[in-house]
Amino acid sequence: MIVLVYLLLLAFAGCTPQALLGGGVPSQRTENQGSLTNRLNTVTIVDNALLGGPGKLDRVSVESSSSHRTPTGTLEVWAVLRNMTDYPMQIEGRTQFFDRDQVPLAAPTSWTRVHLPANSTATYRGLSTHADEVGYYTVEIREGR
Amino acid sequence: MYELGSCYRVGVATIASLMFCSCLAPRVDNRPGRATTYEDPGEQGAVVGIGIDAQDLVAMTDQMMVDMLANPHLSNPGRPPRVIVDSIYFKNESSSRMNLNLITDRLRIQLGRAAAGRMVFVGRELAPMIEHERDLKRQGIVDAGSKPGTTAPAGGDYRLAGRITSLDSVRAESGVTSRYHQIIFEMVDLETGVIVWGGSYEFKKSGRDDVIYR
Image (tube, rainbow over all chains, first blue to last red; front, side):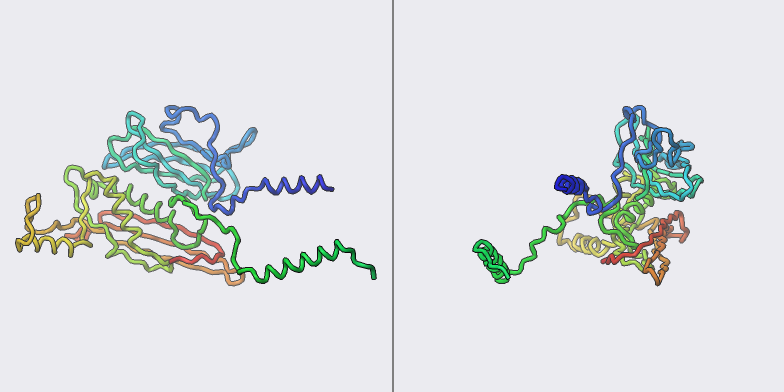
């Protein structure tokens, strides 16, 4: 009986009061992202909650992504995302832009919320503040908070 | 009835004396509380309600900024337009309490840093300050400064106007409230009145909470 009580106390002591800190569950990096060069001009899902894991489909898939120049020379990036579940979902995306030497240009954009209807698609868009200096980009996707 | 042992009597006396002492001790709320922590203004914080929160403001102004920089009327390195970005013509018609300068000040500063000469900003809100200094110079009370004088302060080419509106709904039985916000931004040509750029930011939140906005 004393051993059982002791084990129960240890179990409760291990609970971290994350709710007190506010916000959602911290996102985790996906595995095997490799170096920055491998991730340039790509869309990366940085939240394991969106990934299916071994033998399972991901909850969100990236159907297509690309970029083009606006009339003022800034770079617009977009990614078409598909909700693979039967439930509506919210995701957030942000973009980091780099110059032609792969040096980051300014801070990443703010997280932009995109609503994904069940089994449907929606598009995330990101715009740079710099114009011709922009050479590369990376897009990060996480579950909406 | 059984006879109380001496140890038991000492224990009872000790407990009684401790209880008496606690009555005399000063009443201090000695709970540890929750330590103050810094939070990322662009992320959802510890206190979130159905009004306009910091992360909404950050996302909204960043989105409008990049959108304006992609518009050829407003972003022209060859002939940068003069724009006025302030809250004079920005109205809050929503049910959310909001200091509109939070939106326009952040937008103006972020735009100014990112534009890098593609647009220039006129501080129309500071006109009394500029007029006072120009008067001092023309009266000879101060010298002309290090730059050549102009006949008049800079006129603006475009000015920001905007409006915040909202739509509330409440479920009486549960107290859950839903609020939809629509924030529109427009840049107006100050000669012709033509709206050369428009942007909108909308979101809807629902919840049952007692968050107070000030």
